[in-house]
Image (cartoon, rainbow over all chains, first blue to last red; front, side):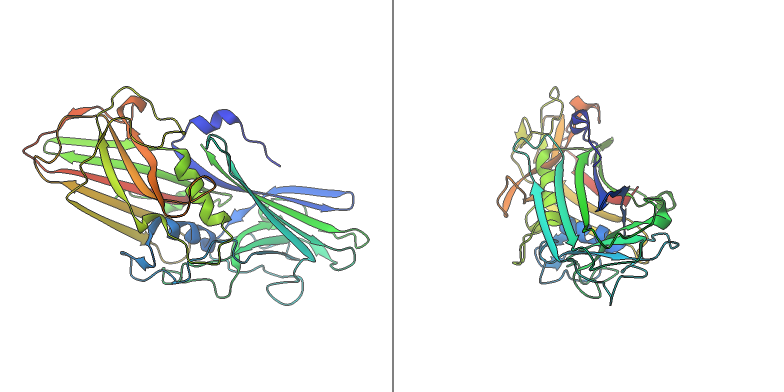
Length: 196
Length: 178
C-alpha cells in the first residue's frame, strides 16, 4: 500500500482522493493505482451539492435515497487486458461471470477516522474468492459503490452498486496474470483522502 | 465561477477537491485559494465510507459563509471555527452546481453569500465555509467549518470593509480528475 507522508497533512490547499489496489493470489502479488469513473466522481460531488433531498440548482433532484456509498458495495474482476479506463465507463469490459461479475465468497469493509483529523482518512474494501472459484487471466477489477446521485446530468447508476473506480492492466496499473486456482484470490482496495 | 480546463484531466487515477474564493466590496476585489480543515476531509470521507441505509444529510443541508477579523493565524487542519468570526450571517445566500454532461468532466459548486451595506465592518482577515458535517468524529447533522480563507496563509491581503457597499463572497468548490 502506498504510504503518505504526514507532512502532507498540513498543506491543505487540496484534498486528494486516491485508490490503491493490492491483488494477492498465492505467491503472486500485484499493486496498482485505480482510475476513477464519472459515477464515482458524481457520487462524491452530489454530497457537496445536494440540499437534503433536493438539488438546489443544476437541473434535477438528488435521489431521495441518498445512501452512504458503502450501503451496498462489491468488487468484481474481469479479463479485459486491452481497454483503458474512460470516465464514462459504468461496468467492467469483460467481467468474470454474468455482469456485473461473480461476487467474492467473502468481503469486509473498514474505515479509519483519526481523532485529530490531521492524518489521512483510509477506507479499505477487501474481497476474497476461495481457491478454485475463479479462473482465467485477470486484467481488470472494479470497485462498485452505491451511487445515489439520481437526477444529475449522468443520472444514477444503471443498477446499484455501480462502478466507481477501475483497476486495469490496459491503464498500465498492473500486469495481467493467470489466476492460480489452487490459491485464494484477495483484492484489497484502499481509498485514501489526503491533504495535498 | 472558476473556469475548469477539462482537457487537462486525462488521467483519472486521483480525484482532487479544491476551492477558490472571490470577495467583492466596492473597489476591493479579492481572489484567494482556500485551505481545508479536518472536518472537511472527514465529511467527504463519510460519503464514500458510510454504510448507512438511511438517507443521510448532505453537506448543504445547512450551510453558510462567515467572515472573520483574524489576520495572524495560519490555517491548520485541526481548526473547527474561524479565529475571530463576525457572527453576522449574510443577508442573501445561494448555491449553484454544475454537473457537466458527457461523464467526462468535473463537478463545480458555487456558494454565494451577500451582506448588505453596513451589516459587517472591520478589517477582514479570514472567511470560512460552514457545511453540514458527517464523519468519524462528527454526528450526522452536525455543522461546522470545512475550509478557510486566511490572510495569514497569504491567500489574500486584508482589507477594511467599505460599509457603504455590498460585500459579496463567491466560494467555488471543484472536484476534478487529476
